[in-house]
Image 1: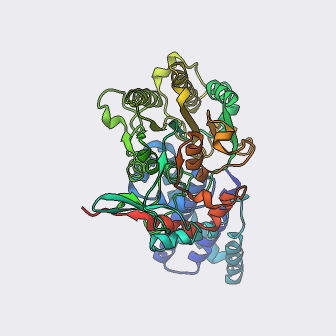
Image 2 (image 1 turned 90 degrees about the vertical axis):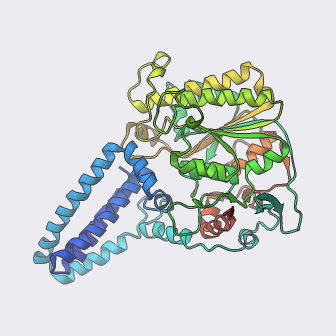
Length: 501
């Protein structure tokens, strides 16, 4: 487990000392239960994300995501329940022992030291318990403002935006120009790989196809994961809008009631240029991503469109079938003689152990564990998909982009142990060249850069701009996000459009 788990010690000390100040057992138990819930939540957050409770944890703290998590992390859920009950019994005993064996002055001194120790950043760049909780406050308390005012706060003075009048989309900007202009370039295929971070390239026995693509095409190795883009739905929202998924408002289901956003999305740019846009995913309910895909203006294709055709799988479809459907969508859109943009999200390499597809045993040799098998299967299916496009000549006028949605979550697994042997990072792999992308592979890129890179690589001409276009070249954009979480949360909240029927 990461060093940050040491936070449990001051939290336990604070709990038993605070409870020991009271004689009544009901008061003691109330304090112990409440603080134990918080302690277990902190440990759960550390297990999944490697850090303390933050906005990502808060957003996923809703019934749907909790049930989803219980179905995947069964043994971890059992462990959490056991830990919770065990801690209550232990802390209750320690509370009464401390009450009778430790003078009040020493208890208060120990209490103060425990509080102070929570200001210690147990891991570099991980923040403290207090700073992470303050982050939640910063984001959730961000106000809703007139959209242009929210833009100006981030120096986005000339940013195009859209409104909905009588269910019709209209565009405008601060200069009064009410037209979004875009001109088609190449076809686009964007493939977001579930948790498939850069370290998997080191597992050459699992990823021969990805390594070959890395050697043959353009590879950006410097792409850190940023706040507001560190889980599946947030990652998708970021690369579609160029803005991290930090949403003002005290709700664990942000944008649930919104039907559109005033932010210019990739779909907004591509559709006026004649592009067909579709998003292939295993299940539209996975990680709440289906609603957000609709919100950014793209049609979803999932297992719901193929009832009974493919074997049932966690979150709808196995990766093998996702790529089969993706190829069908490519063929269908290519035959329409119009440019297309296809977005794909895989799912079978989901933490902690991946989802094994036994059909792949005919082409994948036995592996040490389920995640290794799922990783090798993803690599094979992705390799087959790109190879088919190449064999059919489609890559001559099609640009593909491959990147992970986020780092692998969880701790204590063999996969995480191997991935943690060096600095963990994301990446971008594409057949677009550096000249078209207007970015050198030795430079650091960020998740908020992706919509601009996707359009540049496909040579799509547009007057639309994104947040990254207003930031200085070479600047630390991850640090910019950290410093402007509240303004970004205000921008997203102010951009939400609730269409009235």
